[in-house]
Image: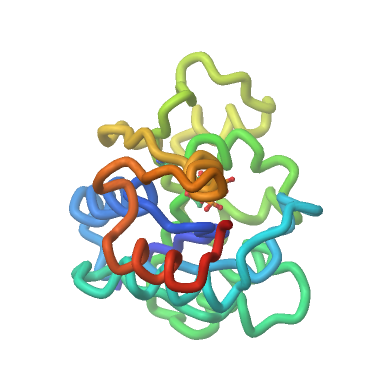
Length: 200
Ligand code: ATP
């Protein structure tokens, strides 16, 4: 079994969180990819987020009809920041037979050396880096240890078509009462976030 894990704040989840993952699943033949909305992202201290349960619900709604893409509330069950290495250890224990793949956007990859126990992450799972607009594998400045991972083939850099959507931009539009770009956010998610005025 090949299992992909994809963590994030998903505040809100959008097309850029889904299309590249679909492409990765097909390309690597992953049985499923598990999305892990994080309760309190350790990398974004101080930023206020929509409630964790609302971000989890939006993730479920977005993935309802997506074959092989699922959400897990695992990180919401912890009452402290969830560190990726601990999440990987959890899934290793829960699925000892599985080959684990950790999916991360290029910008997160470039930041990996700030993550807790980051040297253990590529030992615990194969790293799969998703192309993201504004982030270029060739020119992005990388910490030498992160560049070495890529150079040694320990991180797979995928060049799937980048999707130019970001949660930050969507939150700005919603806060200003402006319409979202068509198709940027799955329709059920749009209805849910408007129903509860999540970003106004
Ligand atoms: P924010 O704008 O709120 O900081 P974000 O999308 O950068 O949002 P997360 O929701 O935590 O942050 O992202 C989850 C993962 O998805 C991260 O690894 C991020 O790099 C990746 N990601 C986000 N948007 C895209 C995109 N358009 N294309 C590829 N990867 C993306």
